[in-house]
Image (cartoon, rainbow, N blue to C red; front, side, top):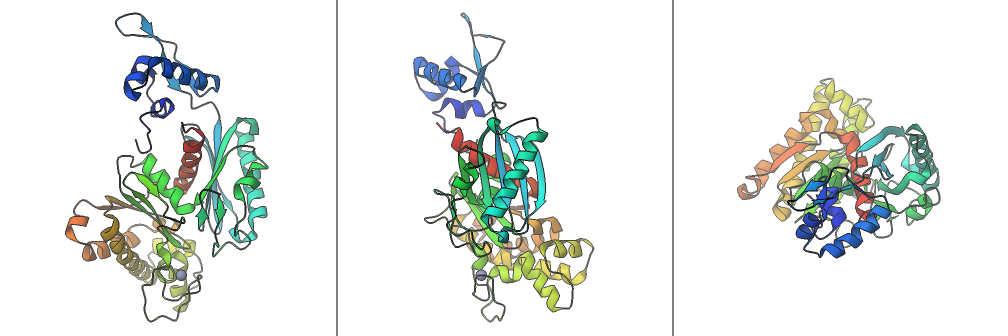
Length: 377
Ligand SMILES: [Zn+2]
């Protein structure tokens, strides 16, 4: 399991199998008395339950303990530039409620977070729950975030959000621990823990209005020294370029290969495309220019990823974001460039796939981030 701490009772029980006190002592290497103290504390918090049926271990029957995923819920939000996915999960990360809201991140933190909190309230009511059932909240934002404080750091498409205390504001509505990270890191966390827990080195790329990557290196999510690791959208891919990126530089990867970049290329050719969604619709309907430009965008992304492959040697690359909904075209371009550019040893076992459930991936990851924090030893 991706984030299992083998020395912690709760981490072992979160894997799903009920255990006896003897088993827990053997697995953690701790004394039965120590395990007993920990279990009592967890029973008191409702996080562990005793199963009815006692297991016979040869001598007297012993009780079996299980993680109680129903002891509360966490709130999760995956915020994008123009819309958000909001959800409520149980303590095992199972999604109980999920919805999409049209919501412009540029409206600023107070307006956006009020909308998010209202939607969460609504979802709780729908589940027959109240704020008292909430144990924690996790949010992914479409820009750089200092994970330790939950504050955005000069996010280019988020006016008014710079250094805003997101956890404190959300905790004003729900008095629980609030965890914040950038949207790509939560996507990577969700894919890794839910889909590919055995993968120690994984790259998750989000291709939407912007482009970014979340990195799992040697079995942990890698944020870098300042939380800026994986910010590949502003790597220069066109030396001679008049197209200015939203970061102010020219020739950036995302100026050409993001949904917005492809839409601009289409607009330059006289099409009415303006957003990632427009591009996805055109590609799906078989528009030849949109298809050609998506494949070309895939190649540009693949060129940058081939450099990442040389540095990180991932076992798997997962491509998500709005543009992943356009089908195989983008992925074909990405694969083409990676297998052409990267060294054979690094690509021998590498698989490049699209995300299976891009609409829910961010919510899963945001919930997981909150769960790992509130259920830590
Ligand atoms: Zn840029």
